[in-house]
Image (cartoon, rainbow, N blue to C red; front, side):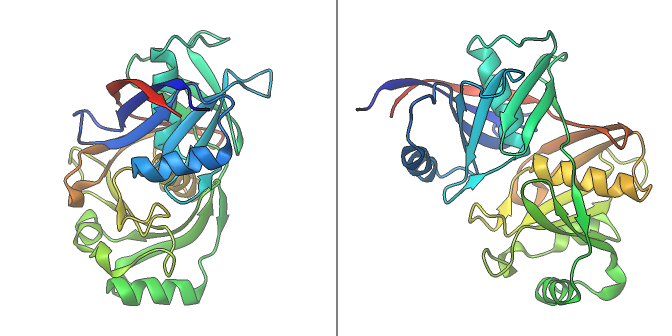
Length: 281
C-alpha cells in the first residue's frame, strides 16, 4: 500500500541553482521495497535518486541507498552531499555537532556540515590499479586522443569504478566528443586536465559514458574523490584545488578539494534545496 513520504529535489555542486547536478531524495524511505526504489529511480530519470533509512550501525546518523535509473550504487558523491542537506533540512540532528555520519554501501562516510550550505564529505579510500593497455587503446582511439596528450592513466575504485586519464590541458578535456562513447561498451571514463595558472578553477573534469545511461554526467563527487586520491598519491595535488565540471553540457559545476594528508581528503560543494513536498510510494 502506497504512503505519503517526504520528498526533496536539490541541486548539488554549483554556486548557481539549476546549473549543478540534480538529485531526488525520498527522506522517509523506511519500509519501501527495493524494487519500488529502483522503479522510482527509473521514473525520476535523474542520474541518481536516494532513499534515507534508519541506520543499522549505531554510530551512523542515517543509512542511505543510492539508485541510478538502472542499478543501485555503493557510493556516490553528489547523492551524499544532497541527501545530507535534505536530511538536515527536514529536521535531522547529528549525534556530533558539525559532523554527519552516513552509512552506505562502502561503510560510514563522514560529512562536515560546519559551513551552512557547503557540506564536504571525507573521501572514502580509493583502490588504484593500472589501466590495461587494451582499455587505454580503445578509449584513446574512440575519443581521438593523441598519445602525447595523455599524461597518466589508471583504474580507480571507490565503490564505482572509473577508467581515468590525465590529459595535457583543460582545453584537451573540453574538446572531447562524449557522443563517441556509451555504456556499456565503455564504462565510466574520467578525464582531467589542468587549467592555466591563475584561472578560476585548477582543473577541468568530465565523466563520459556514466552508468546512468547519459553520454556525460553533469558533476560527479565520487569521481572527483577518486581523482583527488590518485593525484595525491603521486604528489600531483596540493593542499586545495577547485574543479570545474559540466562545462560542455551547460552546467556550472564547482567541486572543492581539500587535502590535509592521504587519509583526510574532503570533497565539498554548494547544495541548494529546490523542491520540497511529498510523494506517494
